[in-house]
Length: 301
Image (cartoon, rainbow, N blue to C red; front, side, top):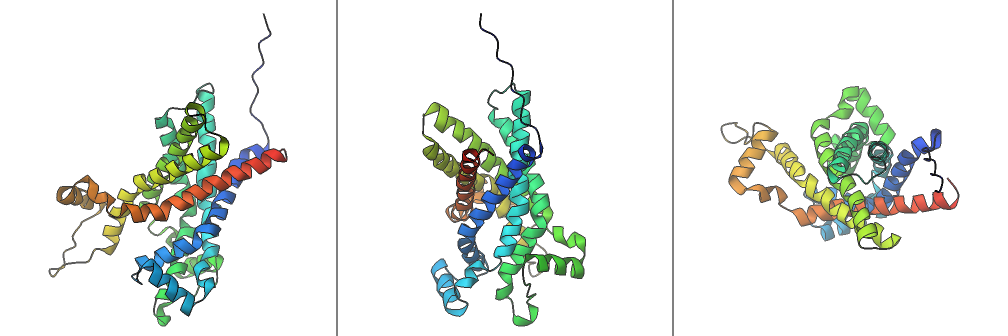
């Protein structure tokens, strides 16, 4: 009889612990550098400045190429906090779950729970940077007298804290956390599940597996988060009628009235456009993460 191989203990030390967080933040920041111009155009469209072509032409003519990277510092800070926390937390949680499962692949519901938890953690950590990003991107659309003129993300954080108090950094964090939980449940769980399917069941190579799984991940991130984004948007833009009555008393009332008037598919109004907004960043994050891991492996980290 051959000798039974001893179980290898997981690596210990500081680097193995912080590695998922460092890799997650770096991949998110690299993805943001690529996606930032698209995100900037998206914000201007949402603020009613016209179509994508009109916004692009206007920005190039009036503000130059640099306008497409307005708020980049806040976007990078958001990834350094939000994505660092969510991807790092997800990998730590799934590794712990794998240990408890004797190394067997996790069922989808466990991956989804890990994604929900990681999304909540990431949103809580990243909310201040998210607020800074939104304000910096929207600043140039305000009348000159109302502009905040933040110099960079850190200046925005300082001003918000000084003018409105520390808690203002988490203004609107409730809906943001709920949406992040849904988005990350779809994004993180579907990616791990797709990797197993493409690699183990279909026999795809590494590149095809990463591209295929990241595409699936982008789709499910959009599909899981859009209903929450739809409700949040309806609440944010509602205005009182002639009698001063608001159309919804809150998020739950909005959900019930939307279901009654348009059915469940009403929550997916504008899904193609929303998917184009969300999916590219998700895909780029996974692709960059895979490349970072390959470089680390090649140099023995």
